[in-house]
Length: 66
Image (cartoon, rainbow, N blue to C red; front, side, top):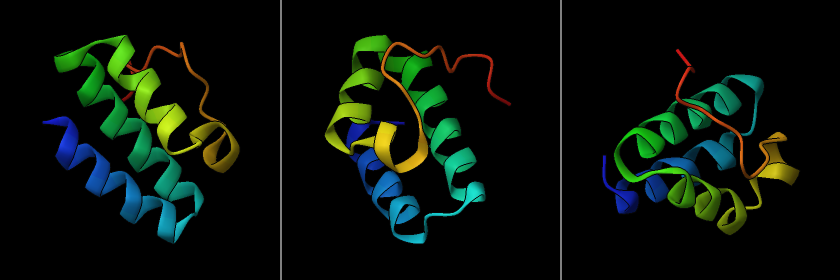
């Protein structure tokens, strides 16, 4: 998944904002981490303020999310 597509998907999930959407964002971040690395994940977390919205912190390893 490219980062542009991840941004689009994260925006949708934030708009819906439930526990299920938090899990969906975690899966998106997993894909980004596997293909683009931790810096890209941390950038998205900061860009969308995902720590405030879903409690997702920069530096978190999402590679084991299933």
